[in-house]
Image (cartoon, rainbow over all chains, first blue to last red; front, side):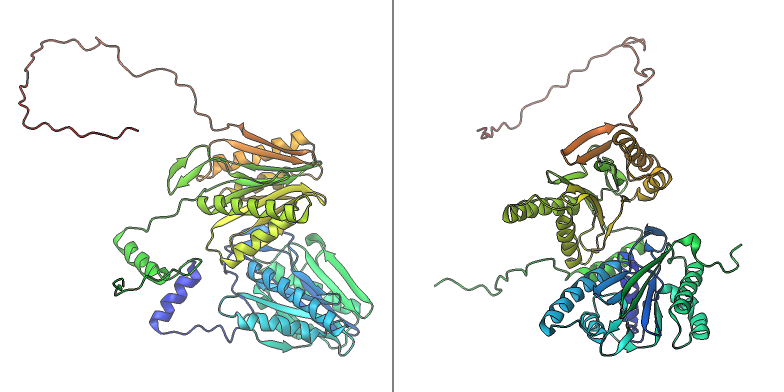
Amino acid sequence: MNEATQYNLKLERLGYHQFRTMERHPTNYLCKGVSTGTTILAVKFNGGVIIGSDSRASVGGSYVSSKVINKLIQIHDKIFCCIAGSLADAQAVTKMAKFQLSFHSIQMDSPPLVKAAASVLKELCYSNREDLEAGFITAGWDKKRGPQVYTVSMGGMLLSQPFTIGGSGSTYIYGYVDAKYKPDMSREECLQFATNALALAIGRDNVSGGVAHLVVITEGGVEHVVVPGEKLPKFHDE
Amino acid sequence: KMLNCSTQYEMPNAGFSFDNSRRNAVLEEGLSEKGYSAPKARKTGTTIAGIIFKDGVILGADTRATDDMVVADKNCMKIHYIAPNIYCCGAGVAADAEITTQMMSSNIELHSLSTGRPPLVVTVTRQLKQMLFRYQGHIGCSVIVGGVDVNGPQLYSVFPHGSYDKLPFLTMGSGAAAAISVFEDRYKANMELEEAKQLVRDAIAAGIFCDLGSGSNVDLCVITEKGAEYLRAYDEPAKKGQRGGKYTYKPGTTPVLAKTVTPLTLDIVEESVQAMDTQ
């Protein structure tokens, strides 16, 4: 039984209820097994979305089990999701979602809507909310509504937003993204915005690190951009 | 008509029973106040490692199994056979690692007979992670799966909660931090066989010397396209030294000054013979 469960048991006996329903993003990086303890974000720009994450997976908050883990999972051709929280739970859920979406798109004989993808993840998270410890950000492009960003929190809440950040590193960049985001940015501006945000979060959060993975999704297709650690923008890093 | 019992026998439900988890948690708390602790499952407290080199995969492991702070087995085998081209190192709870890898081996044999093709490393990884995820981390075994199949040499790690990772070099177990530092320093892509074997040996040796839960010998398993070569006791870095001298005294060192003999006469009170079946 890990520390978190013991603590929860103690609280329950004392009469406190678990406050998980109000938690929007998994910000506690101590969870079962390997944690992605991360910084993830997705931003809409003029003509597409950019979805990005760091690449560190940690165990117990003090050991980096992987420096190059991929947190941007392609669940359909033009729909990606990034994962936060327990790596085991996130991998299991995204595999399930990928299967369900591909089945759905065959039934519909057309690529799925981004909202459908987000809904599938939400359904999985909500029905198993007692057992799962993973949150997601879904972003992509579809013909009906164009570029979209959705966030599915740990308890299973689904929200659509112009941009969203998540993971333990996101707490350090709320101010930055709130101040610097502009609607209808160009692709280059948006890429710079996302890279800066990731660099700032990686700089301050111990369980975020490695390289910055970015995926640009537009009507034309999908493009991966990887920014290695030393090429990330520096902010007074003497 | 047979007499009915007042309590019917209930067949236990399949799978793990977690009925006593809460009680155990409360007991553990109570015990620690008095200074006792609950008995711990025997862990392999291990250093296991794997790398991909030019021609394939090399897996390495130490050979110590610990029971809390006592060495239960000085020469156990932590590299398990899964298929002729796939081997698996297991760390964590010894029984869990042993049984899980045996189950995987059986499943893979059946699967490969069913498909009519040699097994793939990804198949082993997927079955392992699905099973470990199903048991939500209660099966405490961390595993490094390595092998060479039609897709080339591959190395995967699977954690007890069911997450997996594909990397060119991996270490796990209590000595992982010591071993990974050796890899981080000296790993290069496409190493030659001897250089790679030496690197894995050094990484495991780092775990043996710097981690209390690892010790004894280094086992290696080299897997290439041609097949697997299990090098049991490839190196014995922690071999016991030769004693320089003896502390026993020669008979006659102590002089005998006097000697008295007192015979004890014993009467037989009762005599009984019990025949033993020695078939």
